[in-house]
Image (cartoon, rainbow, N blue to C red; front, side, top):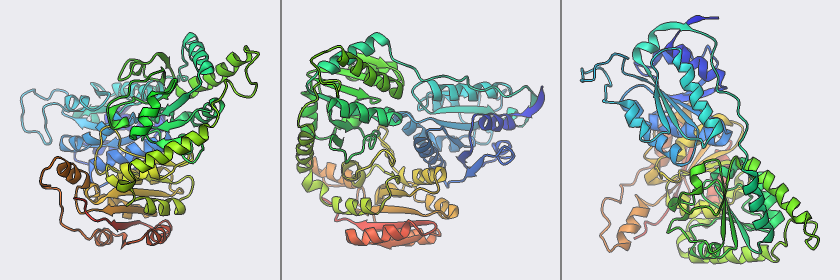
Length: 545
């Protein structure tokens, strides 16, 4: 049957039909027709204090649930405010949907001073999103939303933007039943390539698995393959915890270690799953593997990007790895001399080798990382196994928590990797807590990064759920300070005036405390996890020079 819908109702109807239950955003003059329909269609809404915070919250919501995160903005500056979050989601392959109004259909090309007018919203968002779709009729809203969800389900997930002109948002047009993205099964790899990869793995004496964010849904298959092959596992930041970092075969997040990179390049076979193997993953030049590189990725472009694959397995990681485990066993069954309990002669002493390599990795950076390790052990001792830790582009996170805070597959560690935005941790924690209010969620940040989004303490206070925010305070931008000093420069514009961050948290309606020892941090964190609202805990650091 056909009924008349406004563009605003068409947007909300389509979102609800695709299973959206939560949205993040800020209402404005131009998007009120969207907000009018959220409650009738059963979509809950969280109002951050800045659109960038809405984007990071929706990003984290998507990462922890596996479902697209939805953010709503108004026109012009609001949409540009969220652009950094869209860029982060693109870099980290996160399914983020941003919906905004746009200038009217017949808006003149020459500026006429309409509120929030800008030359082209779609061109601006195309620079950071997979696509920006400006609809030209109310019925086309369905097609735009279905296009977004088709991308989320069938390809490498990326953020998208849908723009609905102002006049269409308020105008009612005849519309039929809602149109949905077609169901699609996960893609499988080419059988010939799969057989070739199984043969190579079956013959190899030294294999390593490199796991990225694209391996997240294949955690069980990754572990099964690693154990069957006796293969050590190393992950990127986005792959952290896919295999439990306390497992004897796990090297955790170690691609930044020179010793690990050298060891990696010498392996006979590298099986890379769901990772770009990019500079932002490795923190240095890309290694040239001496052996065979097998890549598993849903994105065909990754087979020849960065380090080209010797064997490319294009498909969903869970499906491909499941088939690969079976193929390895089938290949082994044809070899009468092969062991019957594993698909190849698993390297002996692999866990011992991994333990020794962990020690070398930690020795390389002990002088730098020692300031965080005792505190991170205290954090780990308090957190539940399924806790979610959100991270910032801060030294305590990428030098500290990434290698030194072990996470298992039931927990999550969310880090803004490739794009490297600041201010991610706090709004991301709000998004994760919105998705799973019963799980422990902790934000980990530095004093510089926190102040990019510190206003979201008000959002956390309004939500009322326990939300600890642990801040290592080194009096400014510690990483840039050290880089300047390493160049022989006089550190400039990197030392920030002291802010009483616990007092600021209290002013926003939360709680705040300063601690000085790992024991005090453990006690404060344990209390914060059962105290409604945000609790900001500062750990002072001596500013490095």
